[in-house]
Every structure is written in C-alpha cells, then in structure tokens.
Amino acid sequence: MRTGARRLMLLLGLLVLTESCLFQNEPLKPNSSPYIVSVNPEVYDIDLNAPLDTVTLRITGGDPDYDQLRYRFVLIDTATGGIDSVYCNTNRFRFEARKGGFYRVQGRVYDNEHYVSRDWYIRVFQEANERPPVIIGYVPDTDSISCVIGNTMEFRLSVDDDNLATCLYTFLVDDVVDPYYRFIRTPRFLHRFGENGIFKVTGLVWDGEYGDTMNWYVKVIGDPDLIPPSAITDLEGWTGMDAGTVNLQWTAPGDDGEEGRCSIYRVRTFTIPILTEEDWLEASPKNGAPEPGVSGTPETMVIDKLNPGTNMYVVVRGMDDFGNLGPISNCIRLLVRGFDADGYVRDAASFLPLEDMVVSSSGVVDSTDENGYYLLKNLPMYADFTRVRDEKISGEPGNYYDYENPMNGMNDNLTIDYLLVPVLGMADLVIKTSYDNGNFLNFFKNMAGITGKFGMPTIFRGWNHWPLKVFNPQREWEGMDIDSLAQVGMDCWEAATGLVLFEGVATPEEADVQIVYYETEQDNHYFITTEVNPDGTPKKREIRIFLTNHLSPITIIGKMIFAHELGHVMGLGHSLDTGHLMLGFTSPWVDEPSSDEANLIKVIYHQPAIFDGANILDD
Image: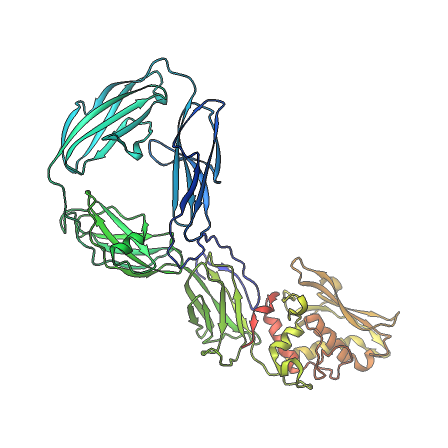
C-alpha cells in the first residue's frame, strides 16, 4: 500500500465522504485575482489619541470568477514589510488606540491563489515629546553624490531624540514616497538608480508631532543596459511528487544575451498556451524561482499550490537588473500532480479477482490486471465519482452490473476495493415476470431491502462477521429431535452456497443466533433482532419456534421452517416467487434454498457489513 494512502474499504455501496477545501468555483478556468470593491475609511492616514480613540476599518472584495473570498486584517512590520501579527479573519476590524506609536494595518481579500490589499497608516499620540527629533549624522556624509547608472546606493540617518523607539522614517526620491519605505522604524534606505539624471533623495524623521529632514542630490551617469537576457529554449517539466505541484528544468541565460548572469526569473502559468506578450500578461505569476546562476547553469524549480490533476502551460523568462525581460521561453504543457485512487475489483459471489474491468474517474481510466488491481493516477480535486464496468463499449451488455462510487471531491489518496455483482440468471423463477422478467439485480435489491422505493433507505446493514455462531439447544417434540431439524436447515444453506455459514456454540451468551422454543401459546414462527451494534448492524438475533403451531407444524415441515427463518437471520427478505424458499405471505412450496437465493447469500457474504445498494447500476 502506498505511504499516505487512506485505506477505505468501500465494497459495493459504502459511501465515501471527503471534504473539499477548493475555493475556486470553476477550477478548469484560469484563476483571476480578486479586487477591492470598497474600503472605509477611504483616507490612508489616520491620527488617534491614546487611550480612548478607536476607528473601524472595513474592506469589501469581489472576484471576476465568483470564487469564494476570505478576509484578513494584519499588522505589518514596518522594518521588514512582513506580517507582524494577525488581527482577525473578517472583513471588519475595530482598531483601539491603546498605546502611542505608528501602526500599518493592512486589509486583505483572498481567493484560492491570490490576494489584494489596502493599507491604513495609523498614528497614535500618547504624550508629546519635550523636544523634536534632530538629524545629527547621515550617510553618505555629503549632500552631493555621483554614481554609475545601475548602481544601488544606501542612505542612512543618525537621529537624536528623547524617545528614539517611537520615531518613524520615510524616504522619498524626487519627492515621491517609496512604498516600501513609507513609515518605517529603521533609518536605512536602499535605492537603485536605473536612469541618467540628477535625483533628490530625501530622508525624513518625526516623532508624530515634529520632524527633521535631510536631502541628498545624486548625479547618475553612464549608458543604461538595453540588452535583455537571451531566450530560454530548453524548458522541460514533469508532474511533481506532491499534490498540486510540477517540476521545471532549464538552462540559465545570461544578463546581456548569453553573457553574465540575469537578475531574476519570471515564471507564469496559464490554461492555454503562452505564446504572445498578451498571453503573458493574462497568465498567473508563480513564486519560488531559484536565484539565477551564470549563463549555462542548470536550473530547477518546483511550482506548488496548483489545481491537482489538471493540465497547464508554463513559460519562464529571465530579467536583468535594468528591468529588461528576455523573450518568452518555449511553452510546455504539464499535468499537475493530483491524487491517486487504487484498489482491487472482485466478483461479489465468488470473491475471485476480475481482470479487464474498466475503472474511471474524471477522465482518468485504467483496467484491472490479472489480480484485479487498478490505479487511477492524478485525479483532480473536483473528482466526484468513480465508476467500474466490464463492458468495453458503452451500451453493450456486460457480465457484471456497473458500480458508481460517489465522492465529494478528492483531498487525499484513496484505496477503494470494489465487489461487482455478476449478471446472474434467475433459474428457479416460476412466475417468469417476477423481478422485471428475471433481473437478478432487481431481485437482489428487493430481497436485501435496498430498493429505496417510497422514501426507504438504500443502506444494507448485515452481519460484520461470518460464520454465525448458533446456539441450537437439544429439544424433543412429539417424538422428534427438533434440534436435528434446525441442523438440517443450516446444512442445506451451506450445501447450496458452498460456504461455511454457521458454527454451533454451547451457550446462549456466546451465540449470535439463538433458537428459542415456545409451547404455551399459538403463534407463527419468526425471527427477531434482540441486540444491535452501534453502527446498526445486528449483534444478536433469535429464531422463535412455536411448537404448538398447527398451521405450520414443526414435525412435518420443520426443515422448511428452519431454512426459511435462517434465510431471514442472514439478511434476506421475502420473495415474490413460488419457486423460492423465502416466499412470503404464505407457506413456501419448496423446503430448500433455490440457486437464486444461494447466489444472494454468496453476494451478501462477501459484502461489507454496511453498503449502499443505490450505487449498483443496471447496465
């Protein structure tokens, strides 16, 4: 058995219930990003006074694919830009100004793959400082600087203040705030100059009420890099090891054509081939690309969080540090690793393995081998049922009734074993029109009580073990050993089926089935369930024999009486045909199990204790 597989014995009708955590409504279509419909307050900057002020933040999203959306409010660490803490997982958050300081609160709208966000910058005033912050040093230590185009420069401030921990910093280039460096707690700023000219870099520090600034003027000279990385032409890929993944491999391009090392890789996926720049813009960006090596280096990557069991197209392109994108790589089509379902298919009457049975689910098809084994690989999350049949051409009659196993979507590997009911003839019918002109499946469902008609359930609950332990006490009546008649009834069932169905025990306490005799009143012979297991399957049953019954005298038709009641004990109802031992509403015409009834017991014998007969389908 494969590691991680859930062993789930679903022989014929045991319903599989699995949960779907799929947020996307139509997984086969490309998943578009959600968008923000409204926010409140609409302003970005909010000033509050501690400890009494509050503000309620709201965000509402929409999605072009009508996907299920989730919301979250988080506190952003201004030093790193990452999440400091999560406030709540709703679209509304009440912020309380409990302590002075600066807070960057972000509202997020998620679908299955993407999110969009909106920031609020909240300043909380608690008490005024005695004096404003003052810049006492800076790096570079001159306000006039030159650099070569493409260089990255660091700017840093040294500040004196009564409470440095509450000071905030902002950096601007030509009076435009860099989004990452808006309201941070560290006086350090990195900027790459990709164009020629003279640029003003401004550093600002403030304590919530007062501030100080420093300006640097940077002259950028030199020729910009206009040569993009070369094209990636050997992109290859294959299905990943984990659900929702694919593996990629390619050779690194250079920075300028084939020379050097490019700055970063851009990877995108789509449900249609990505061949043009328009296709590229519509495709979904994927994270996790490796840091580029020098030209000619083998590169590998795993893309995750894809829709399991689906096909997708992938391209990769390099980008240099001037933002020049290389050509779109060769486009490849890959199957995303999905979930597997495997198991064995057997004959429900003989329990022998069945070869060449066709098992299918969501377009994935396999045929069983000589051991009855099948394997459905890479099923999608939205797989909703598995079907088993033996006919190769749809519409042709088969030797077995079809079986359809419903599921609520895949979220793990499954092992499902199937028992197929053979299309058996009805050899002992007297009334040839009974059971739809001799349809064994109709006979089986009626006799097992799983027809589902008139609102009745289709679930069968039978014994969870075989053989059944029977307490058959010694008893004489009118000169006959009645217990020997009971044994004859058990023997005839075993002879008809070829199965070991019963085992004698010495005490009622150890018995599954107890035979009880009454002679104080006149009544019919019958069986009763006296105890059930927690799952509703029988635990103990009694066969009640009324010795004074003159309509069905035990001394004359005792074999038939015991065999009939034993059929009920094993799970059979009443038949509608006079050729059967289990004929109801009148005395049976035969005193031994028919071949039709023997076939029923063979099927029930191999079934699980609980199964759903609605899943067995006529061809």
